[in-house]
Image 1 (cartoon, rainbow, N blue to C red):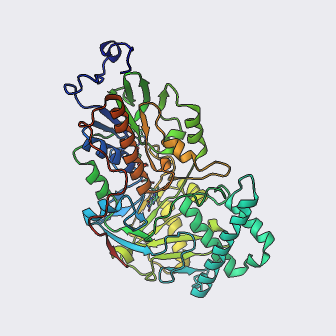
Image 2 (image 1 turned 90 degrees about the vertical axis):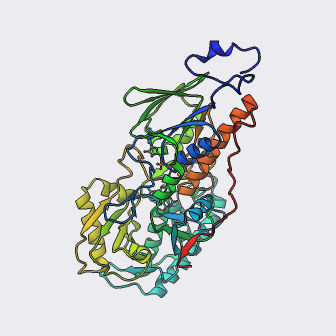
Image 3 (image 1 turned 135 degrees about the vertical axis):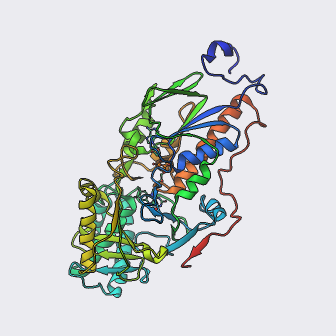
Amino acid sequence: MESGAKSNSELRGEICYPNPQSHQMRSPPSVIVIGGGMAGVAAARALHDASFQVTLLESRDRLGGRIHTDYTFGFPVDLGASWLHGVCEENPLAPLIGRLGLPLYRTSEDNSVLYDHDLESYALFDMDGSQVPPEVVTKVGKTFETILKETETVREEQSDDISILRAISIVFERKPELRLEGLAHKVLQWYLCRMEGWFSADANTISLKGWDQEELLPGGHGLMVRGYLPVIHTLAKGIDIRLSHRVTKISRQYTGVKITVENGKTFKADAAVVAVPLGVLKANVIKFEPKLPDWKEAAIADIGVGLENKIILHFETAFWPNVEFLGVVADSSQNCSYFLNLHKATSHPVLVYMPSGKLARDIEKMSDQEAANFAFMQLKKVVPNAPTPIQHLVSRWGSDVNSLGSYSYDMVGKPHHLFEWLRIPVDNLFFAGEAMSINYPGSVHGAYSTGLMAAEDCRVRFLERYGDLDLLQAIMVDEAPLSVPLLISRM
Ligand SMILES: Cc1cc2nc3c(=O)[nH]c(=O)nc-3n(C[C@H](O)[C@H](O)[C@H](O)COP(=O)(O)OP(=O)(O)OC[C@H]3O[C@@H](n4cnc5c(N)ncnc54)[C@H](O)[C@@H]3O)c2cc1C
């Protein structure tokens, strides 16, 4: 409490607020974490370990959020995140995954996701089922790399931001020799389709100035062979978690926060960590009282949320080429297809079809069976006499009220620093989530690191106010040294 202000008892109301002189006698500060995805559980774990009283409110009847490992097939399959992007010691999640002994299967060694042309990994097919010669895939991959390099010159010249698609067409106007025809053109569209998948957005909405501002960690991309969920469950151990508690209102008061959930029940605490998806914040599902400052609302409005879904097909046996990825090339990026072959990594006969952007939005309008049929028709372009799948799973991240999108990206004309603005606390509200990570947006490790940052910001806020250094133990925000090596197959 500041000097000269009212006494604690006058201010407190129903909340027990700390008194600097009597902190030894009060209970530890309390924090409500809203959202039980990676960011929320990471914040809850760190605050719990630093002696805070933590309650986590989660709207779904499960933890994990956009980490959703499903066991319907009798083995784990991820409907949301499945890769650790950056299989290296610098990855903030590496120490935890290493300690848990969870195996990773490296699908590519290259840390670039855009023009990786590791030929072992891919088999691309034309619409008529004929395989694209590997040398064409490599050659077009190099051309795509050159085109993206050329867009850097366009970026330097343009004062206003434009889309990556517009920049590519400017490059074609200037250097017609980079424009490809026939099969090579279709392969180029497939590379563009993969780029759109990385951002979960169409190329005409992705910012030329912002698209490469995230930090790509080295070490390539490793699939979590046993699914991502064990990481969430480890972090959540011992935390007071209330599932099926959808928050509808967050009131900031001088004495703390009051959180209202759907059934009218209220929770009070000294502070809160808001770790719900950006899509949920955009939809105003949660009312903030008083309203959030204009700069925060602008950041919420101006960061994009894209859509990527997974249609998971389970077969009796694996009958497709033994490569990590299968692709179908086409005249436009939207008509290209992209399958992950889980059989390579897990020995289970499963293919994962991954549409993004407008295609993903269109597919979400279909029933599960129609969506599975659509994915199967794409597969038939690769293997015309493919037997029908025995089971399927379909994600709907766009229409699910708990996510309202897949992950964030830089929209045209919007500065990248908005990701940091989204993270900055507002009084005793702290913010965490993949869209609050300026370095690693759209990723699990980004969400994790913002959870730790929110916890640390909260801890420091209490220390500043009460100066109680013993009560609250330091939170490791910086990467801990990797004590256990990662278990990586396909080195
Ligand atoms: C299809 C797909 C594939 C992906 N692949 C990868 C990948 O391979 N690697 C990678 O690193 N990243 C990947 N990502 C991104 C990654 O999943 C996310 O960046 C990360 O999981 C987000 O974590 P989060 O805690 O910020 O949000 P979330 O996981 O969405 O957690 C937010 C939580 O808040 C809850 N919530 C929502 N509204 C309320 C409310 N009103 N009250 C209370 N709780 C609420 C939600 O139910 C949810 O549990 C993928 C995402 C998708 C959708």
